[in-house]
Image (cartoon, rainbow, N blue to C red; front, side):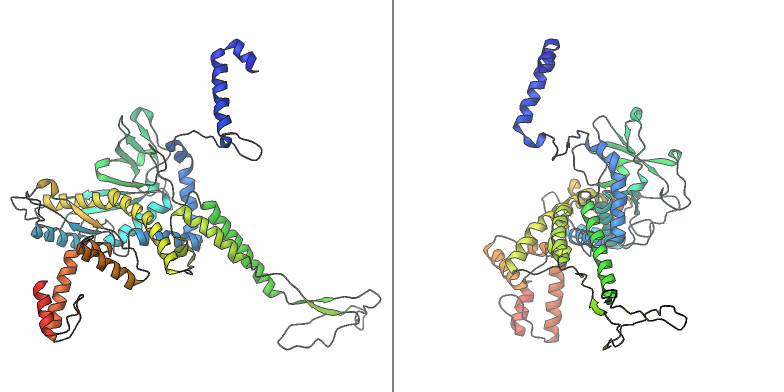
Amino acid sequence: MDRAIAAISPRWAFRRRQYYALLAQYDAAKPGRLRKNRNDSSSGTTLAERSAVQLRNYARYLHRNHDVARGALRILVNNTVGPNGIGVEPQPLNRDGEIIEPLAKQLLDLYRDWSLLPEVTGQMSWARAQRMVALSWYRDGEVLSQVLAGPVRKLNHGTRVPLSLELLESDYLPMDYSDTGKRIRNGIEVNAWGRPVNYWVFKQHPGDSGVFVRRQDLKSVPASRMLRLALVDRLGQLRGVSEFASIMTRLDDIKDYEESERIAAKVAASMAAVIKKGSPDEYKPVFDENGNTVPRNMKFRPGMIFDDLLPGESIETIDTNRPNPNVESFRTGQIRAASAGVGVSYSSMSKDYNGTYSAQRQEMVEQWVNYAVLSSDFISGFVQPVWRHFVAAAHAAGLLDIPDDIDWETLDDAMFVTPAMPWIDPKKEADAFTTLEAAGYISGPEIIRRRGGNPSETLKQEANWRKKAQEAGVGLSFGKAGANTKQEQGNDNQTA
């Protein structure tokens, strides 16, 4: 066949020879009876267009009905956002590069007030809103948030800073709305370089009961006012895909298998025994006065004695092999693989904390890198843009006393504090930080930030506490010196 092709088109035959050479180098590129041909070369946007909605619905089903899936999502949210949300330390600088403390305090005070009512429904605090956004991001693959600043019709911001967020599930952004003439793909309008310009979203959730939405109901929101977090696997991919995409079938199999074993064990617990019959000539049924066979009615009860067995009969219990002793090992292996796919630690996902201190710490250290990456993406895609809109809204509303020597480019600068890695052995961890700080390898503020605190607030609280302890005449030990006397406490307070 190659010779025939070469006679007609040498170029075609040459290219066939090139591909043969490539296939000869990589066995994985050779499909066969035992290896499927997985050579879909579609773009990331095309693959997401085909599958993202189905994966999103599948993930929501697992979240609603599978304890392991719900637990994995909770672990991701708790370790990347935390109970109090991502902390913010304002860092406005003057022209000498020093932090303007009064301005930073103003921003922080306004931010705390705004954190009570950050979104349009008024039902969530800022910490809870962050957790809900992160949950939707991991489960659905993407989440949107419209920024509403200044006077908005029929909207009462409820805080001193006129800023509110409208949090939207990815359903609002239609996957099937595309217009090549306007460069609209999957509801996102992009420019010639692929940068989003506008988002075309529904005014109501298309899945609400009794709601019928049409393309005429779409509204255009500028990209400057719409924040979008998306989990993408490919360069240039527009729409996000659920974090559970690679482990959904495994989680579903675990759920079905556990359900089957649970039902089998329940049935086995209900089966007590059987009456084994002998040979027909030994078996003598009991008849009533009309010649009908009398039905047997034997009920199990504690300590019962079988005293009415017929000739040739015996009692045998049923061995169902349930509960299955191999369920735990099978489930452990499956959850270990699933935890690697979704990016959480096996110990947290399985609630199996057996192991040495070194093993648990190694697992936590390696796993915490994944949490840190997700926290970084969450900050850069959501928290930091919200902070910048917040500072701009506060400045536009005339709520800030800005000094003349400010470096205007640093007005919205801030340091964002992520959840701290838990301590397995607090004494060992604390001793390690103490040694590092004493050697000058790490600063005190950095240690406090790693513990999820604000250095300025911690220092203020510590100074107030030492002052109150001294006034009350309570002997407390502070620091390495162990200041137990009033004079030593006073020295510590003066130093602080």
